[in-house]
Length: 112
Length: 112
Image (cartoon, rainbow over all chains, first blue to last red; front, side):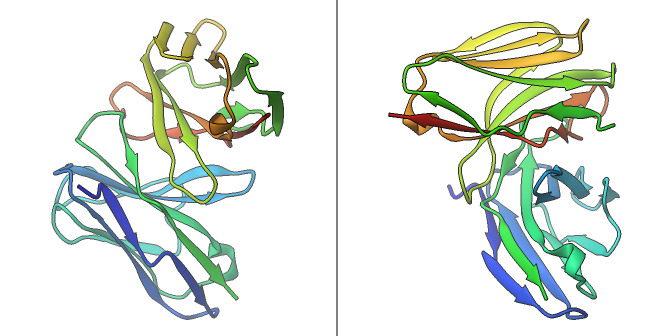
């Protein structure tokens, strides 16, 4: 039981490049989330998926797109990376309309 | 002004000390309150969860919520070097229980 897994662990991009961050959970959770964590800003919600087939914007969605591929997988795409998107990205999942979110280990992204 | 305020620290205490970590918030709709622990270069893990006002104890950890003052606390008794981490408070409103608002985190260092 791996919980929430994220790939890659670390990525360096040049401005304008695109990439997809992958997230998968094996806890049969309905809800999944993408956060970014920046110094002095805490964790901020980018997008979430309350259930398979639905996605909604969070606090900071600009510059990102998401896909809930199936119940297990929720990907985050940067179409044209910018230095302001340098951050640590965390995926999380929860059973449903509950408060206990389980986090993955994070992806460190550096945009040059 | 941020919805959730948390002193970033760092807070340095000797082993065995009692630690008090605090958050204040402005949104009176918040009803679910959580504390997450985050070790360096890891994802946050849920430590304590409380609903509405009151206290909750789990081993060496006690969470307190004072909704009238919009103030929550986490107490750690007999602190250990393994408690050295960043502690994040998080909260959400009824009906949006899965949409968490995080504090920026307090970094705690427990020294031998």
